[in-house]
Length: 328
Image 1 (tube, rainbow, N blue to C red):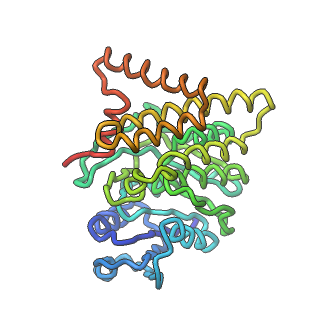
Image 2 (cartoon, helix red, strand yellow):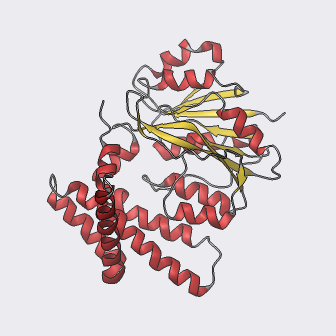
């Protein structure tokens, strides 16, 4: 029977941390070890760890704050100490059958691999504000590497707490790079580029908490993290997809269209409240996507929004705003 190690990086997460530990305690198949790596918290995180002594938590505290990616990379160093590694963020949740379903899905896979589940988005009070599509067939499936890499290159990320890494007690061969907004996309794409197999479990067994204090929210005001890093990540991942020269040229053009569309939604988000920042975002769009693909991206956004209005659906901006400000 494979051993499972759940590593929880945390920094000042006391408000949500008990709920996260409760969902781990409620697993039908509990982890064999749970390691909490505290990134020099200044709140009640150590007290919470002591209050959950029944979980036999292993508590490690960094003498200084090493940053979010640095703390995640410390968690990755535990990969060769178990057959399966689970990285659980201290404000997210997983369903009671998450570990059992994921371990079972990886059972027949040889070599290093990762599995992932689907996720809902919840607000700070735990209310679902974006519900994932629920397929009728929840049978796990092998995902071809090129399909997975293209998805990650489109920044259609899977949620880290909903992932299990089958390490075979070997070191994890990649780290979280300096992409504050999209480091998880790059990290998991790199693992697949380096030979990890991928298993999708098409079942909603994870909840991602939209939290105004998390890194995604903090990066909104930083043009490099919020906009430029997305293109850097797209280009990097695209280089890992085996393609012919013609396919690569077409893929790059499509990525520029997609980047321009994503950037236009972000520009709209700040257009009224901070027009100077909105103009800066638009300048980056024009610089990277160029005139042709930049205009194509704008056209795609406005055409899609028109169709949504005709159908009585929220526009992409309205969806984005609801996730950035999920309300009570």
